[in-house]
Image (cartoon, rainbow, N blue to C red; front, side, top):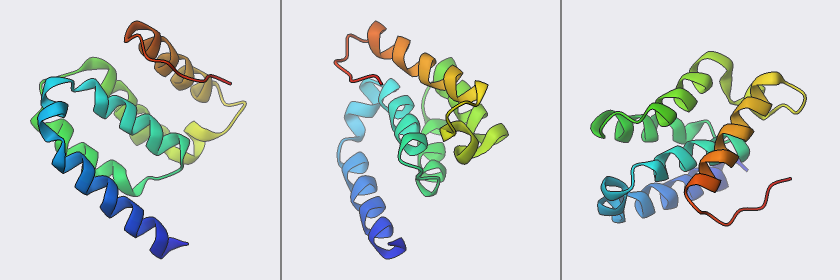
Length: 106
C-alpha cells in the first residue's frame, strides 16, 4: 500500500509540475489540493504543496487551511464529529460555491 501511494504521489507531483502555469494563474487550486490531502489522508503531499505555497502570493484561505493542518494534523481534520472537521469542510464547501465549482457534498 505504501509503495502504491508513493507512485501515486509522484504522478500527482508530475501533474502539478506540468501544469504549474495554471497554478500561478489560479492559486486556489493549491487550496483544493490541500483539502484533498486531508480528505484522502495523504499527509506526504503536504510538504510538496507547502513549497509551492511559499512561492505564491499570499492567499489567506490557503494559509488558513495549512495552519489547521499544522496545528491539528490531517488525522484530526478528517475525523467526523470534530469541530475543526466541520469548520474545514464548510470552508471548502463555501469556497467551491464561490468559485462556481460543481461538487458533491455529503
